[in-house]
Length: 370
Image: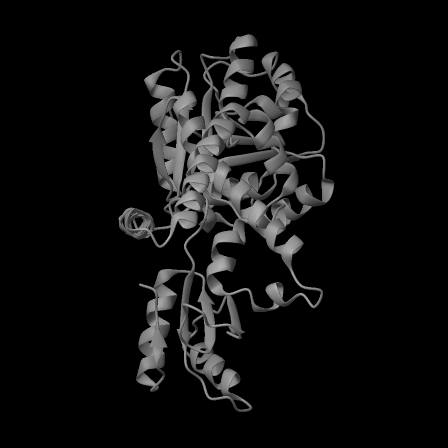
């Protein structure tokens, strides 16, 4: 099946990023979009992301080869009822939600199983909205597909080819397996991160010293707590059982750690504490060093700069002269577990490597994580 037209119901961060990635990889594909926000549609048209804008639904909108449901999950039931009467034969119907069981159940109820392939791009950002969408958001990220048993191989292969064309990695899973896995590696971590941030907030001194000196380690493991509260509320409401079961297991592991700490300095507890960190380190170090998950890889370096006027500006000028773009730059006031006084973040690994070589040639001392 040759995909020539894609339609998007909702054009936020993920929908906009997919649309931009498709347009970049396959410029010949015509892209339609429906969104209740007219300014979003206008901006998408001005940027050339979409070819047709629909502020309201009409039969023409549904004339497409693949239809992406990118509106909030709470709208899926309503949208699927509208789609049922208009979707054309041979069209691939998909979504981008991070929980798949609920929508698969509605798809079965509405008799749409022959065309539905659930989709979950394992990518995201703490920012929201089309204005923050980026085609590079999906590069090297796993894009999980959960086809129903009634979908033809032709439709599935066409979708896989489209996903691969814009640099994502298609991975086919059963939808129930998907929900259990993502509960462990995505949903539970968000709950833990948010809970930890709230613990520090509630435990902080009147002067806010905990927030002031929060080091790199704390910021790294709580970065995802800045994600959309509405989205994560919906995820907890739709993947409740898996999250609850894994949360029970996690709580049990924390209780075990607390009990072992209470038994210190007894030898068995000393061994347990060492094993806790050693086992976690070995397993974590075995993860592939790529941005193939919901938490994107950060391309940064730390370097020593003198504490004098103009030192940061000189560093920036060196990079600018060689057309190396900086995504973020800042002074490291708290350097626990980190070296270097200045942190610079780049948009990709190629820019990071070029900057390392260039700055080392200019006698900078560079510290990298890998």
